[in-house]
Length: 617
Image: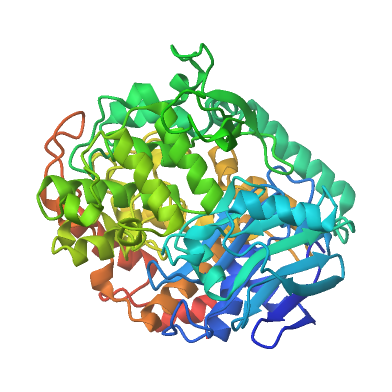
């Protein structure tokens, strides 16, 4: 079986590290990664606990396909109660940390309590110990990574670390692994820092054994890779342009949120697009994009590695940013660019580099800066509050200064680190926060893509595109084309995407495979790798079970039907241009149907029949 069947439990308060067996009954019901770790979390913490208190837990988790020869089997997740939202949080990352943990012999690490002093966990196969982190506390992710590699004298160790922003309490801080891969959303890094835990350092040399049917698994994974190679999105579009392939597409669709979602199209979109990243700069003749990159076992290679012009104002005196590092992906380019009105590609790349180095979610950061810009332009804040910075839409200087302040936790950066919901509430304009459940929107305007409005409103971790990516159907026609401008039929579509996504996440593979794969392609890989009989229907049921379990956690945490909502701007202010001109999001029509399709009552609570059918105690 593809599980290692071992958990590492780390009591930070007592400094104890113990091994325990994985609950295989739960594994059969929740599969792994997102589903299985969420099951552990809901069983072990009070949903009403303080996310930044010692009673919250932080779980690093792999899936059964993590570390195997399955394409994109490089994923791991961090599960906790998020401080940005107060809701259940599961943040997914790629790179090499997840497979290293699996090859060290562990399915999961559960951190509980709070260390009295800064520490990091060093895992070397079966051995695990907490070590002092005094030398790396207060350091950036990049600085800490170098120090830890020097200390352990092993170039093969894999490191997940938090930066200064998390230590300073920025509520959307991320956990960064492999220097520029991120468990990015909901503030999982803030939880890690609140426990005085700076890093997880891992070395694994055991490999991943226990595959149920090795020959069958090899055939199933090869079949899957062939489908990915031959698909236009996973075999061509994503390798060449990364997720940035979407910038011009979504702008032309009239669903690119601009200037804090006041508009739906950005005049500068072509300047910050995937195509623009390939073009030589006028200043030095070199393109922004250096190369593409792949996570462990990935045959898609959508990652971007970029370089900034050394003479650009953001890096003129900062040689540490002259080398290549993780480049812009679509969501970051949108949040740092279109949403703030900034169309300078190198400024966006610089801000993204800082987010990587100091561990911040660029979506929440950029959207919060956009909210601050609207606060500034409406007079709710002035240079008195911002420390002399003119937060005007389109200002590269304001964006660059803002990211530096949040990273260091200084000045107005402390306000920006609260996220847009708390920022706008503090300055008396809560309606200017473009959030659901306190989490900032990603790069799709719900007026131009109706299904995404419903997906945002009902997402268990707050506004999120990766919990039900109906853009695939509404814009790209995958698996079939639906009209993005109508609400009809979107309840069933959103549920189908949400359940399938939960199954993909729980398997330990990348959700980008779903551009080419259905669960019919995933089931044979799970079935030949894992103990038991695994069918498409069973995976869909697991996805539905995971979704309802997360929903119940949030209900117990205090969320209600009123939290399944969108900002008034998106339901009352009509889109100003493009194909969606004159449209608002029709959430009021979609939500009741969604509750019915889900098997929930009119208040959005799973019915007894639904809970019994899914085996939720």
